[in-house]
Length: 115
Length: 115
DNA sequence: TATCGATGCTTCAAATTATATAGCAAATAC
DNA sequence: GTATTTGCTATATAATTTGAAGCATCGATA
Image 1 (cartoon, rainbow over the protein chains, first blue to last red):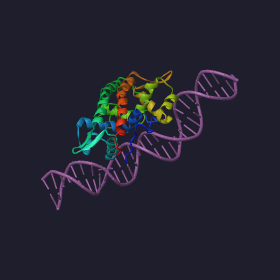
Image 2: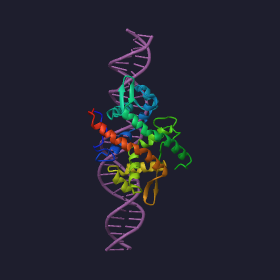
Image 3: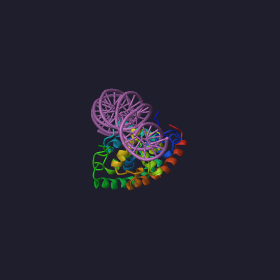
Image 4: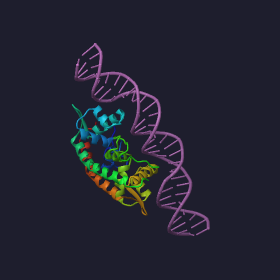
């Protein structure tokens, strides 16, 4: 039903399905990383809460990404709504450094003549 | 000309332009992370080499992503072709842990009944 | 100096994805 | 039982990506 890129199967970036490319294929979809980030920040939450925190995501997009992330074992549904799985939390931990880099990047862009 | 999401300006995921959301917006585009990854693996390389290593990217897509990554200061053109900037290398370093996670994830997916 | 191959793209139509808006069915709260 | 809230679905439109073809420029060679 919901199709996700899987290591070992052809994905964008690798016909043999290099794991990193499969992951990039999944995370490179619109909102994927944002959802993981927000879910980690605000903890277990309902669909509508998640939607509100993502500010401009459409329900169709949110729904699709959530389904993918569930099939991919990064997110699961519990009584309170949606949560990161242990693997999802690991993923989040790996994304954390990007938060710091993003700030540095923002400064560099400002100090730079726009192209 | 080439438009990229910038911290401080409205981006997907943040109307105020939270840096991490701007970065996710950029990296969440098709092939962005894959290009950074490949560029780091094979070092300075030509357009066609990059294209070959990305296995199935179309030149139009590669060109667009390269322009964006250059405007974003992650990639630059030198005599030998394209290279990561120092900031681009930092970005790569932050992506490295995802390589390990991807392998673990691949195993978890296999050991799991597919949904 | 003519031609060849390699390189760095551009073009364009077709397919895929994403967005925005409306709204509905089920569960809970009153 | 009526009103809210929640978790979506539907649908039309817009944006992005793909895939294939090909062109312009360059340096090397004949």
